[in-house]
Image (cartoon, rainbow, N blue to C red; front, side):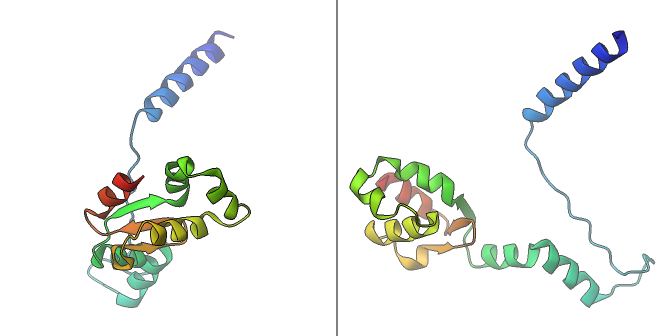
Length: 133
């Protein structure tokens, strides 16, 4: 019984500590399937980057859209819209409301890009959106 209590305390402490951290992920890319030194298989590496979604992320960053906001976060920010407006979009995916809101608030189309789960904004453009909300 004593060991189980110590284990539970240890797990609670670990959980609290992990809850206070910011997670970062390190992606390890293998240079070749054989794991041999000094051999670089370009297509093997590109396939890994593609599967991890890193190439898509690089394209977004290269386009100059470093700020990413989830549809859910923007939907929460739009909660103060008139109920009649929100009713127009009931049953619709969140991205439909977000796209319509960007158009309604006259956010230039080249200032953002709609993704599958997020909206990507060019540098500085998110402040314009925040000021409208």
